Image (tube, rainbow, N blue to C red; front, side, top):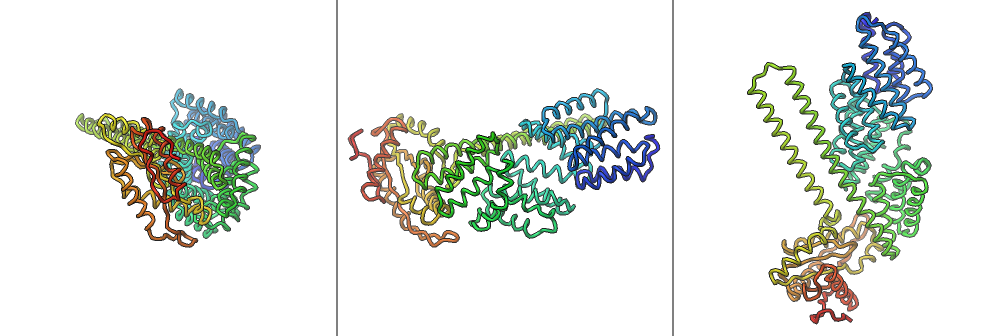
Amino acid sequence: MPGEISPTAAAALARAWELSYLDPQAAGALGRRLAASGGALAADGWLQVALAEVRSGDETTAQEAMRCAREAYEALEDRDGGAAQRARGLALVDEVLAIHLRRIGDYEGSARLQAEIDERIAAQGLAYDAMQRFLAHNSRAITAKVLGRVDEALRHYHAAAAAAEATGWDGPRITALSNLGGYHQDLFNLEDARALSEQALAAARKAGAKPVVATAASNLIIIHHAAGDARAARAMADFLVGHPDELVPGVLERHALPLALAHLGVGELDEAERYLQAGAVGAIADGDGMTFWGWLRARCLLARGHAAAAREVAEQILLERRERRLSDQPYDLMELHRVLADACERLDDTRAALACVRHAQALYEQLVGRSARARYAALQVSHQLAQARRERDLAVDSRRSAEDDRRRLAELNAALQAQVAQTERLHAQLREQALRDPLTGLHNRRYLFETAPAMLELARRQGQPLAVVLMDLDHFKLINDTYGHAAGDAVLQRFGTLLTGTLRRSDLVCRHGGEEFVALMPETDGDAAQALLARLLEEFQQLPPEAVPGRRRLPGGSFSAGVVLFPRHGNTLEQLLSRADRALYAAKNQGRARIEQAPRTGFGSLV
């Protein structure tokens, strides 16, 4: 009976729970010993066997263990706490069943069962301990994740992390950190994903949790690359390869694609292609990593100058994912459209390149929105958990004075206001990111078309001139073809920095797309704009040569520009840009490295 559990048996049961999310096989073995002993612990033993088998074992064995656990709990007598143990035990058997339903693909069935368990626990006044709370919240989080219920998944992931900390055990804590970090990575919340994954990696290494070591390190490679830190991604790959004693044998084959990404990010094409070849079969066969593999392969081909082959690979991946109805993370799909745009540009198919750029930008904005939502939801969950702990403390210590209660309420309000302010700052920061070109740091085309109408209206009301300049880097395609994509990026960044340092703060400077830049210069006539641009052209041509890693030094650069005035050459931004483009075309035709003003006689032809 429940009251007859020996201290040794109780310690064995506690140890089984402790190992259930660190070493499931060991936890299952302990469960079998408890089940074989009979008596009150048989039901708890079969529950441990069922949990271990459903997570990492055999489906038939798991179902048999669940049946034995259910029968053993139902056989418990009411006296000596047996009724409460029976009700709680049957709920936990259903928790394991919900995990089983999710693993066989019945996500809705798993969610319905979990909701029924919650109703039953509330109606019967039952309470789980910390480990059981972790089991329940972690399972609900994963179910909500696969069903696309973002806020619900985040709430349960954070509750699982809090329960895991309360257990004091490594297994649930490492699992909670790894799962939460991985989900924030999926939501493109890179800052939280990096911090949580680094904590998971450190804890897994300390506890010897080898499967989590490889998973957390691979996630960090992807996170560092997405954040633009190629060196950190490469260092994490070195860690994976250099610590085989901390990994499950053969695990590197399952993480070949992140390793390929780490090498590709620093230009090590031979190593990247070797890992791509190792991960090709699995990624393409099950479809789970097909898009990831596809954009990595296309990048390697493009880096070797095979633009046509890169385009073929990217387009084939897009076709296969449509035919197989696969869903991908927006980040991988965005990178696939980006590399396809670069390949089309190399092949002079500007129409296709522009379409791909637009697809990639739309996915980027979607990722930024998901990131903002994830950070906001995480702040809400953190506040709710903090509030729950405060309310619990108030209930335990009901003798506190009214003054203490008022002070705690003020602290809670202050914390809430601080979190609201932080959330508002985050939204402002993410909006700013969505309106800036990630390569040059300049504002992008979207910001240009949002801001320019107000600038034109102000110039009209004040009767002041406003110059619109369209600039295009000369021979940029030749730089990309000769020196590589990284060299082209370096030239764009240098020119963007020069624009920022040369033009006034009141001027609006944007990257219009590719190697084109636009500047709106209030209170500036054509001659003043011509003089400033001439100085800018001279400074750009005189910049010292810059070395690109693995390449010879880049030669000096130049640009051509077309200048128009508002309202002489147009009343809208579209009209002004069209006229500036014609002036730019004239500058190109007259030898490049020059600035051409539109004719002063209204809308006459340039040629």
